Amino acid sequence: MKKQFLGLLLISLSLMLLSCAADSPPSPVTGWVIGETNDEAHVPTVKILKTGNGGASWTLQTLPAESVGFNGNDISAVNSLVAWAAVGDQYLLNGGILHTTDGGRSWRWQTLPDGLGTNHRHIKSIKGVSPTEAWAATIVGDVLHTTDGGNSWAIVAVKDTNGNIIPMKQVNRMDVTGQDIWIADSQDGNLSVIHSADGGRTWRQELLPDVVASGGVISISALGPTVAWAAMHNEGYLWGTSDGGTSWSKSKNHITMGTDFDDMCVSSANVVWVAENGGVGGTAARITVTNGSFETNSYKNLNYNLEGISAMSDNQTAWLVGMKSNRAAAALPLGAIYFTNDGGVTWQPQNLPDNAQDVTLWKVSFVGARR
Image (cartoon, rainbow, N blue to C red; front, side):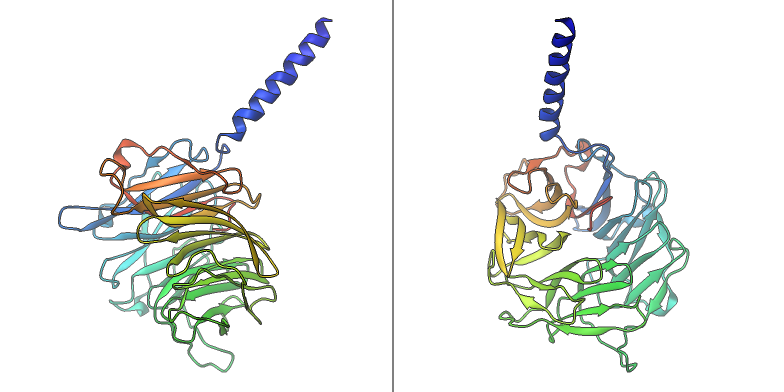
């Protein structure tokens, strides 16, 4: 009888723990978010926050004094110790790359190659693929690559198989999977993804069909060498490829029109998470795409324009960041972080530290996520 009672007690305790876990972020899971503060003269200073417990708590990290004057554009988490950050100024001219190898206890500026010139140093997007390798892109389309942890960065020529330069006008996002580098050129009049399938040796423009709006590609996320998803300016549709970019197809369904999917994160071949800035609030969605049709868990937030999303491969767990909309209550923080562990059906706000209430948040990256 005693053994039976102890068995029932253990089962009850296990069920209680599972119930608590369902409402709590996974731990330990490391992630970073990036954004900036602005002083009274509207001069920005890049800011980075880190969590080591799935977002149950966040810490504002100490950055070099030279971070004053820059916006936080992008963040890429490699492991619990290594991350890269892309920063740029408000004039879209100057910027740089910040790097940590000790979990963010210290961040250091990395030296950019001289060939960029003085007006080509606004780093818009970055992707770390290992503790030693990363790719980055400036806002005007200069592509950078390091294989030694950022001790040296090389400029990668974006040329086709005939040696012709492929021009880019304004990069918004990039992604890297193995030898494949995918770039969203948001002002490209050709409405194409810029893609290399051989580690940057050769590149091609991959045209996206059936585009209605006049803008270019604003976001891109890839899963391995064959599957990638992209979104356009001012269209709520998705464009996908399953053959490594040889052909792209437009989804039959859409979520919103006239706004931008500022970020997207593929968590499996047919599941895409998006963060949309609606100007006055935003929408986040977990989209399952089947033959071009959507099955969507959609979440609207009127207080925050949603700008960044990072999702795990379990298809249920994701983090979302945003910046305060002009209709939000004055008492609310300037930035917000949300977490879901039910596939985007519900999102819970995570607590920001007191010294980060004035940080506008822009992008998020978790270890183990595709973004």
